[in-house]
Length: 314
Length: 270
Image (cartoon, rainbow over all chains, first blue to last red; front, side):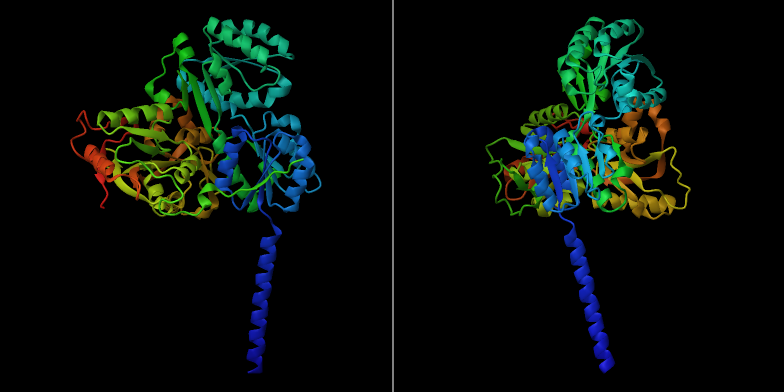
């Protein structure tokens, strides 16, 4: 009888201890913090889809475009002891990078940062992210859908900025049996001269997200030249299609949020570390076609191809 | 300095009541509206879809304003805020929405007489399926519901006799994204509709060589049209049933939803 009493006490004590440990473990990790750089729809859309799929409760913070708010806001975030910080935009991500420098056990996942490489985010082992631009191969797939006969595509780029991007592009070009006609430049000012050399040898021009080539002046100039030279010009942003370029493949920013939620789940479940994850490209895309320009170039996309366009500018 | 902190819950976490907290839907005299979400649609151009579906119903004398959605999160946010007259969604979503949004399935769409369509599971050509443990695989799919995961688990058991827990479904907005992601090595597998795969292979014949297909296929239910309980006017329900169920497919007054490859309807029991 005495033995049974002791055994019962032992079992009860063990259960209480296990319960306390589980409560402590659960309580040691706070919510996921979402930090927006600003209030624009551009950030809100992926934030909403992230929250809808997030692997846990979420608390949202907003720099409202003011980097000087960062110390206070980051202090508030860290006080929550968040499980992970999801940042949208360069200001938010940069703030998180600085403020978690000495807290490398706190994962930071970023998205919506144009040219993320220039900020050197992945030097911190706690940071991973989704690049803003789709894979170069995805853009080539978009071109092939609407202009399957085009086989010679010119691309002007700066080797230092875009070496890796072009290397990836070559792989897909090989699969699609496309010839990439490459032209390197060192300065933005050389773009127009290179274009004039390239144009007679190619059937299409591909404008890639290279900070040396992709400038306001170069784009304004090439938009007119593409029509004049009857060249199929495509790029990575809807903005250039709205003017005169015929095609763009850009990321589906709402899907970036749900993609990030999946990645957050992988990190928080211990399946992968941020360092192992690195920076990946968005999976969702938008294909935008300017039909006005397409008609001027004599393009006649099939109904099946048109059904794959996310947006057609009439 | 203003500190702005929002404690934010996903919209669909808010409490639901039958139709309360939401705007009342259409009366008999107002034009009906329809929220449309079908990520496996052969056409992803929402503007074209809206135009064609509206024209089809207008031709049948049931004018409907169609609001197409390409993302589930946007559809569900709208369902919380504004009750439509009708909802066009995949069948498995309508099943889960019966409790959450008080929808009532009215009509099951058919494709060549079938209530289901086929999805195929593709895998990277370089993936070693013969290894003892399947590497953790990301499967791109337009769905990530538990229903989808069960179907995938079944395929793995039948095809590979492996533990199905080592995969993760990665959501994409449309089948084209799943196929692109697979062809470019961003994911190891993709679950896509057979019809959409055929369409894309025709447009991009070169990428077929990048992946293979499991022989097993998955059948998923065709989408359904639902009414909103307590909100959709009975007259509109009756009219919808009338125009979609009566007459043959060749009839010029029957809505032609060929853009969705839908050519028949079946009524759900009341």
